[in-house]
Image 1: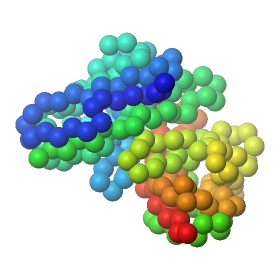
Image 2: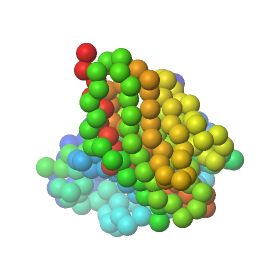
Image 3: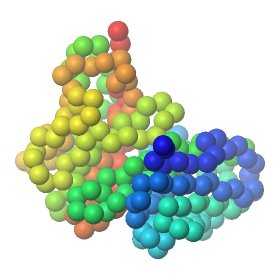
Image 4: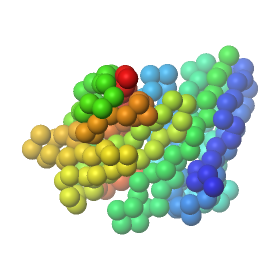
Length: 114
Length: 114
């Protein structure tokens, strides 16, 4: 069974559109994250949620809005897509108990904005 | 603020020869350090982690890393490279009081030739 899954795997859309990426984890973890990997492979955290509560919110445009319906899901909605939003978006989760807080990553969603 | 510097953007080795991927960190407090691997078009997989226990850390697939506080280094090594090791490797740091926030290095592309 896939531990952290994301849908879709690929997303091609035009500027100005609104799109969502879904993430689910079946590990029973308390915290979930969204990362953005740019064209140079640089990874940066965007958000983290712990038990549906926003914990980390890096400097990300307001067009990006995470939503956590329950602690197993963290979706990313993006409004008014721009060319610069093209990237690979990774979802991750962690348990955050003792030293066992390593993050488990999903396979990524490659977003291309044309 | 914590940061990591991966000293080589690309490392090329021949199959069967040793691998050395270099990482230096900067951290105000006791850091936790990780190495993640990303195979082409795949998500990130945790190779190993250091969390203030043993300074020599063994990971999966024969990789290991040594935490050297005096040198602020956490280099990744493997005695004998395999073709399947070809991937992007990321050195990552998080801090004791902000452990959910991972800070990634810029990555090192490992190329393995026959």
